[in-house]
Length: 324
Image: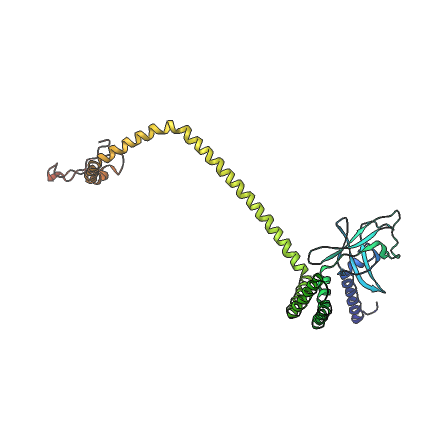
C-alpha cells in the first residue's frame, strides 16, 4: 500500500467540482443532456433581437437564440431548436413579442428534407419587423442634425425669389415661410421633446421584463376580481331566492299566526290592566316564601319548632312528621 497524497487528492477533487459546476451552468449546451440542434440564419437587420430570446413554432416555445452577431453587411443569428423538425425550406422571422419592443424568433418548418445545421439559412427566407423604437431614435438623431436657422433662411429666400409667382404659389410659399419660422422658434422645445421621447423609449425597452410581469400580475388580479364578482353575484342570487322563500312562508302562515297574535295581544292587555295587583301580590308573597322555604327545604317533610307546647319538666320536643 502506497501512502496517500492529500494535496493531489484535494486538487483533483476541486477540479472535479469545478467541472460539475461548469456543466451545470451550461446544461443546455451539452450535446446529450441539453439536446437540441443549433442552426444559423442571415437577416438584413437585427431589429432588436437579443440572445436568450425565445424561438417559437406556431406560437409554442421550442428553443432560444444563442447569439446575434454581424457577418459582413448582414446579421448572423445562431439559435437552438429542441424537439421540433426543421425543413430545408423553412422560413425564419423576427417578430414583436410585446408592445414595448421585445422580440422573438418565429420558425415555420417547411420542405421535404431536414435542414442541414451546417448550412446557413439565407436572408431570402428571413424577414425582420419594423422597429418603432429605432424609428423614434432615428427621428431624434435626424432632427437634431437639422440646421433650423439655415432651413428657415433657405425657405425665406425661396419665398422672396418666387414673390411674383401666381397667388396660389405665393400663398403656399408664405405658408412654408411661416412654417419655417415656427420650426425655428420651437426648435429647442422640439429637440427637448424628441430627446425625452428617445429616453422614454430606451427606459421602456430596458424595463420590458418588469412591465411584462406587471401586466401578468394585473391579469391575475383582474381574474381574481372576476371570480369575486361571480361569488358576490351568486350570493345576491341566493339572498334573492331566500327572500322569495320567506315571503312565501309568511304568506302561507298568515292564517295560523294571526289568531295566535290576537290571543297574545289579549293576554298582554290583561296583564297590563292587572299590573298593580300583580305587583302587590308579589310584594306580599315575599315574606311568606322567605319563611315557608326553610320548613320544606330539608327533605320530604315539614321542619318546624313549636315553643311552649309541653311543660318545662319534659324538656324540648321536636315534632318530625313526614308528609305534614
